[in-house]
Length: 88
Image 1 (spheres, rainbow, N blue to C red):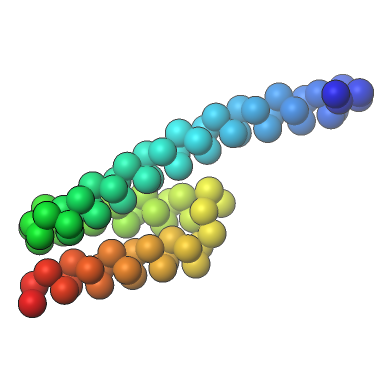
Image 2 (cartoon, helix red, strand yellow):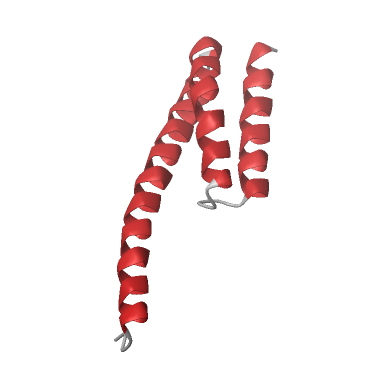
């Protein structure tokens, strides 16, 4: 348990940030899931549209330290590669 007033305030701030970050992470994962489902179904157009929405979500999450920037770049790269394979 926090003893000082500053530690108590820090605990409150952490709780607020955690709630916000959970929401952002959930939203990001949802947009990635839509892309992955479109890829799995073989629908290239739907995958491209979903990717146009998912990429900014991933990069925004990386900017806000919800996920590591390299992890975001890796995810975008792998999804893009998977979509490119659908064209063949």
